[in-house]
Amino acid sequence: MKYCYVLLLLILVVVSCGSPEQKDASVTLEHTIPPPPDGMVLIPAGSFVMGSDTGDEAPAHTVWIDAFYLDEHEVTNQDYKEFIDSTGHPAPRQPGEGAPRSAACHGAGAVGPAPR
Image (cartoon, rainbow, N blue to C red):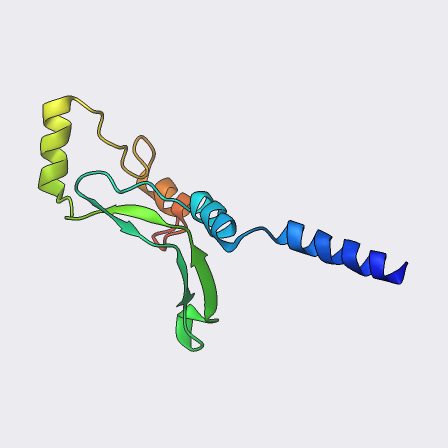
């Protein structure tokens, strides 16, 4: 009887393991990232140490960033202006647009003159 239990346990372990190729394929499918669009590069996911243990950047801590795409070449202000002008795309609002400058500085947490 003890032999039957051991044999049954061994069969369950072998069946539940599956082949290594199957496991690798499922992991690969879960972590597939589409190729970057033209003119962009993939920045892989990873961690880095942000900050420093001294000064204003303290404390140093590890940050995880997911993968993302980044333009291969920078877009200059002139390039962006040409895009806005040629497409009619609305330009972004400037901070504090439509509000007194002192209110804009205060809302952004910037150091500036106190409101009167």
